[in-house]
Image 1: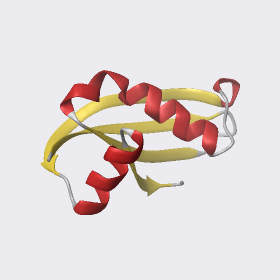
Image 2 (image 1 turned 135 degrees about the horizontal axis):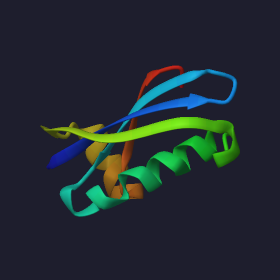
Image 3 (image 1 turned 60 degrees about the vertical axis):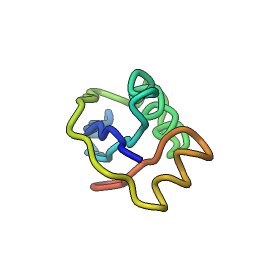
Image 4 (image 1 turned 180 degrees about the vertical axis):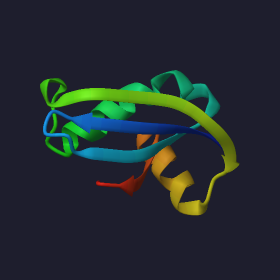
Length: 84
């Protein structure tokens, strides 16, 4: 499976940086920002807590079995990189 990687940078109102990737299939690329927002809500942040957010397409890559399983189960995979 080939997936699209969207690079997410978030700064909260308390100036806390979070950096993570959202991996999706090409068919769900338009939902990357929605999936990022859902992940932030699961981490206890709502839109009032976010000062700045970017969601940029980064690259394509071949998905690992763990990524494939997550995408098949929920439509996306979150790769936590910094501050998550």
